[in-house]
Length: 630
Image (cartoon, rainbow, N blue to C red; front, side, top):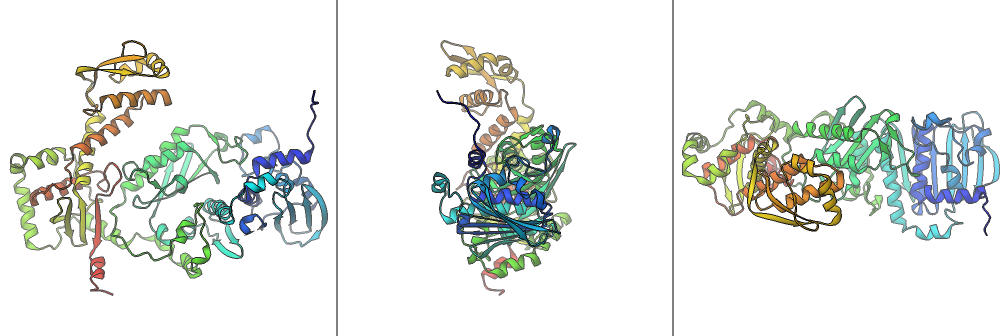
């Protein structure tokens, strides 16, 4: 029988290293967090061969007292918490006291540190101190790691290529720079500068340095506040999207975290503004009482538990929706790419690209131009707002004004004479005045391929997708109707017979009251089989069974029925089916009425699926295309 015994410290540290030190990026993260906790304002990160050959972190923090350096490399030795109460009110990035001993146990580590009076240099190999000597008295700490995973060959084999590991390190450094714009970060890989921030506390400059100037120019600031939370940061306009969620960065009290529900809250703020399968680019910072968050959940501290998580999500969603309600979101015609693609792919992409391809003058120019992104919007946005505010007729050819007057005079005739317009446009006009801050007056010119409408005003030319435009009109119409649905039920001529699994049947049996509250009655009809004889009138026609199964899936997943989501999906489905399709040729007055109805919509920029409705070609861009200006 095997004897139970306490493990030796060196073995315990190696086990802990398996949780804390997964790859070079893990080491960089832990050491940067220590530097920030030490009050550093300038941090240097140098890696060679993706961090597999060496890692060097230098900071100008307060340093470690010479008589405490050895203690810092003992397991669970920390200056950041003292008692049980501190564990529930953590205000620092680190607190476990595991990082330094874990890193030292699987590498050769040299640390030079000083509090500004006397410095000490300590060298450890496999967690054991092999040398101690005096060093420079310059305040701060320098740590060099070599021979990483020399004594854990299985972990060494797990590492990927140099480029992959460099990409992971870049991901960590970029997020730290976004979280702390007041700290200057200097990051080099194999002697090449990858990131260099000024530390002037301007987040938008860091965004420009990480993603590129063009991306930074499309970011808009967000702000939100409640009794428990303060939300701030930047989100990209809906026309700028990404193929994965990796570009949504969430920071709580300066700590980067991963949280599915908060990421969903960000996406909800872009509801109907993004195409399916595309995700927003966002940097969201949350300040909150540390007693409302538990960071002692995972060794990497990337996952946390939150109190009032739903309330926080609501604040984030509202902040994003409010900023977009005040923005003009008409996409501009594609422009030639000015800066190389590499500068935008660097951040958070594991497909790391060599930063040497990006001219250094690009990064130098960032700091000169980024201020303008805060100060003023782009010229076309400013001009559109000016036009919208004045609401003055623009100087257009006489025939367009004549057609406009005719369009107004013919509205009553259209109700009878043109069933396409009457059934598909006029009856769905939202009962509100035109929002002067959204779309300026548009004057139709014609139609292309029975699909796209060509319109103009004094700011240039507009292309409008007629199906997407009416889909937005229909969506807002149905959404309003379904927001206060009638309690009446629709009887089915032929009852639906539905079969469920044992788990689904048990949930239906337990949730009969919830189902009846939303107007759904399922009668038992044999083994795990139910019959439905009526359903709420707002169920989309032909989608009764799928709607019922959606409700059952919600009960299985969340134990509740989200009527808002169901009605939202129903409105989207009905609007898509009811909207005019491509290859439908419209008369001039029908086009005019469609554009005027679109201008009355709350969010006239995208269809419910997130596709753009209209694209703007400025007069200057058209003249440039035809070489009238150079």
